Image (cartoon, rainbow over all chains, first blue to last red; front, side, top):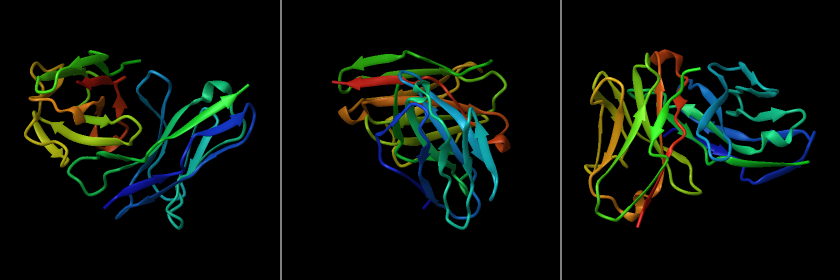
Length: 114
Length: 114
């Protein structure tokens, strides 16, 4: 079945460091891919998405490219800030189901220190 | 910006009691979802709802669970007889239309079953 694998956290970085959070997926067909972010005490917010191979999603300085050949959708940011501290979830749409349910990875906690 | 709201934010209940979790999706959205996140685990799909009926449900969504859209604005999740293992954060999400795929999440209800 469809699944998402994310790198284990927590990831601890200093401010202005480069961020990569790895995400790989297993899916039949061509799912859409998403990164959601959960700030402390809040719900899930869509950070970025890509709907087809080689698409790059970007938002707030974060980027991820849909790589079909490596079945990956790694999240990157060139210079993280303390305010980026949150849990990041990679997800894919439930391709083939009756509805586009989301299938999530385990989440990666990012802690950015000043 | 419109947002999905959920009430209550926290609920504590005794095992065997019924609970109703409430959600108000974004007003022009057509598809509605419930997900849950057991502490430290991944976000899991429970059920999707469209046109006043369940369109898909997971194996987690057994006979103890039900969903309803009682009045055209609220979307509820009922757990008839709670178990300890139902303790989790429950998220509601909505999307319009289906093909856009971007699900908007509420802030969640943290349910604790004692």
